[in-house]
Image (cartoon, rainbow, N blue to C red; front, top):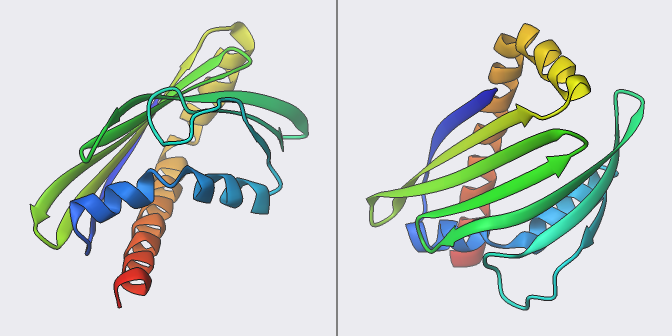
Length: 156
């Protein structure tokens, strides 16, 4: 099951990539949402191999997910792979420079069930796909706006 969205960001591609590669900000966002996140690698710099283990409650059940940066191609893309109780995911962040001060951000999430219970979960998501796609696109738009705001704050 795939979700995808594209948004334009009023910032240069290098700065957008650096903000996307600020993995500490993802950790802080997750903690604010009540997700327990633990870094499981020892890398000092962002890149392939950076990884996390996260615990959270979803639909009344405790869930665990392991996330790894599987591709890191400055300044074009970052890929995250995840594994969570029979559900594998791939999140792709791709950047395209539209002009020196404008960047297109494309985000794609692909979920693949590997167990029967994961298949049932994905099937229930498919029933709500239209609503979930709408919410996903709104979140991506909000995230892109946040990137623009961060860029403006950092560069006046």
